[in-house]
Image 1 (spheres, rainbow, N blue to C red):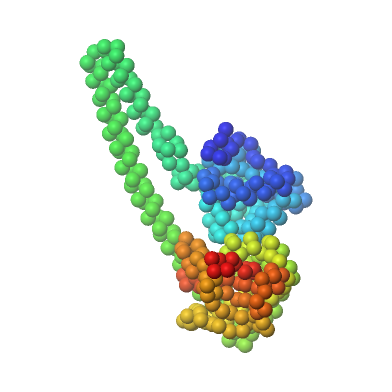
Image 2 (cartoon, one colour; image 1 turned 120 degrees about the vertical axis):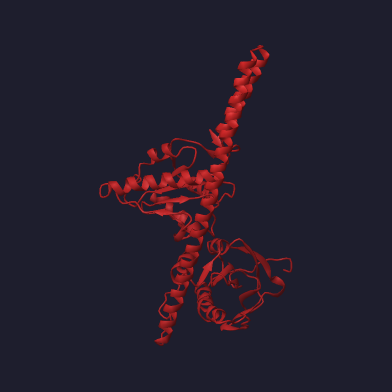
Length: 382
């Protein structure tokens, strides 16, 4: 049975091949997906998930899809999404509708599951948490009267049929009146329920808004703490990234960014995907450029500079305006303009030697966002 384009099944989907895991990636980033995907990984050296996935699939049928990914295939999820958005080592991640390469890992929650032999109670608690999570999501995703038939509509139709039957059979006025009165009572009940739902939605909206404000304050606090720590390191005469090990190949690049540049520079989903197929032959040069963005450039922006830093970063590598190659970029639900890039000289378009790092400054998050790298972006001007 299908629900939209999603298979409704009481059994989990077991990933057994590369084709399967590629299909899973496609399903996860599908913007039309309505169901949460509960992706249960199998840890190295183990043969089964740490949760009862068959039970989980049965109790969430119709409101979620349960997927089992063996350890031999979790690397593909990590390669596609990066460690912060992947799932492995026996953990479970709830990939909610709307997931993309740019998603926050905190929206798509990760549940760490201990081996059942060591923590049966905690495993049971995780199952309960997953059930509540997807049940709550179904209230937001499935519209009553659209995706789900409302009880009031069924009752109204039933009363209409009964009234029509009484008229056609020539029933007494008293019977028809009784049916009409029942319909009036049903409408009053519907009105009461609608008012209760309206109040609940109002309360829920207020609660979510307060929660969002709390999370924003926590984010601001974390960013401020990062700035404090960086300032303390520099006050001692040290450089924050003095002993950083640079990535030696592109396969390591996205994870290196997540570990070293977190809170200062972030890769967009597009840039993260581009690192998987990059031809530029010097990933360490790109890493040094991002370190410059994380330190000198970001410090200047935080201190009030306009970001107009036309300068040499390294031998043959410059920070400059994009000029006619500027382009619009969607970030955090906003349309922004990418007007600056880091490039090398030589006027070559050979992807092995041509370097372009397109970036923008996000004032709200105090982050440098890498829109695209390391190749030249074709625009209408190029």
